[in-house]
Length: 626
View 1 (cartoon, rainbow, N blue to C red):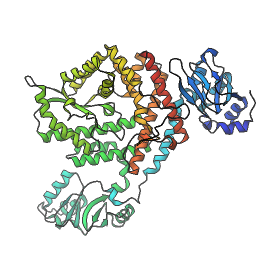
View 2: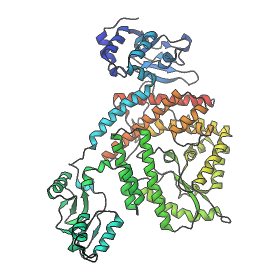
View 3: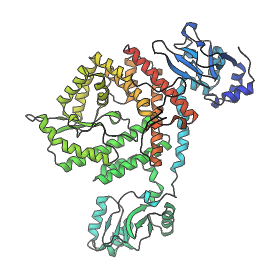
View 4: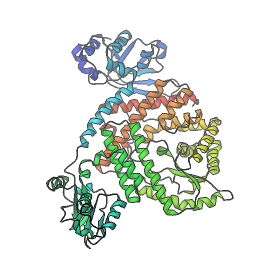
């Protein structure tokens, strides 16, 4: 049955959903006047390939519609109130590929195909939504995220002072010669030093200002005791005080530093920068601090700053692809500096080696909750055995792994770390290990080994990793059985879309009623991109680069690739937002979200992202006849 609905009522109904809520009033009225209302009883086929070229657009007013595609094992798509279909078929002026059925009694607004194309021409928001569906939704969500996080950029002057202490204060006694105190300041790269007594009670502060006014201009000798040139009786506040108290003290006295005490003893120092620019720490400053670090304490502070920078960059609207790359790059710098320091401290005899990153770090896709996945590839000197070289390297590797753990990168629960003898191998041993997986690996073994195929060099002799990658690509491209198994493994992890509810959620256990955005969200894209890259000889390890490079070689339409990329980016963005919320709340960082806590727009985009994952898996299944 059909009926002409009242225009105002239809407009009010439509504007509850995207893209209609972004359309102009005239275009909405034009649309409402051309819609009809249709009823489809439960079980009825609404559209099918046999019906030929599609002649209308459907907008679901009430009920549930599911899509079934031949060879996909039943329903793969579920549509709810406010959703539109079949956009692809209308845009291409063809028949649908899937069969659309009413799961419940369904009421739909319907628009003739000629009017659909006319609306595309007159409404930019409608055109943008139809042609870049998930990308357009993602941009709207990103604007909301930017507004949400921007409110967090203002300094929190009610924060406890203890939370603002960035590092242990640099101190000396009053009888310390100036030369020694200045050397201490230079080594620690600080602009001030606190003078304390034997009980660590503050006696004074010496700053760069004091150096100019009390040492250089009066031409004081450098053997002068620092107590003679310090600023005595420094302003102090208790650690339980608040940031606004420190701000007031700085304003009143013109100081840039306030000392914090606990029980009368020095506990820390808060600077003007800590109060007002903590969340604006820049990439350049941070990378310079990492390169200049001389000990583990400095690198731990840098690791904490990387987390703060991530929050700030989200507020500035940095896209998830760029943000994860920046985080990975900074984490790379931190890891490289840590390896350099530990390598120098260990005094290990020179060995040709390369530190390898696996998993998300290997793909440049680290979020804020990444553990360690790493290894070593080395080349023994002539006459030296691999076992002997490994024995020398393992103690160094353990020191590095444990230092990374101290910097916030937890030890891998699966033991995929360089300190594990299984992953500290010579170049020939790595080739044998990969050859074993490729030629004779069981599906379970390949599932566990998949992250190793994402390796990239992090520190050391890059040419060892380059040779291993080129050997590997030649080997995988020539072994169809291996690629078939990897594809089959990738299809074991299906996005949790439901037929009755939006998502299929666990009902018991630690993560009941949540979605694992890593396992069920980003992993399907990562796995498929890996298979296609290994099949087509793509050297890149980043998921997006793999998809875009492999797509043309495998004749996958660019529009499909970009839809998958947009879906992957949204899931990554959602992971970052969730992890930041965990961080701000003082909870352990994870990837489990309750979809009921998402706003309507993000929930809709997540459903669309999971659908794109299913489309990607359908393409993979078709490629390998699975």
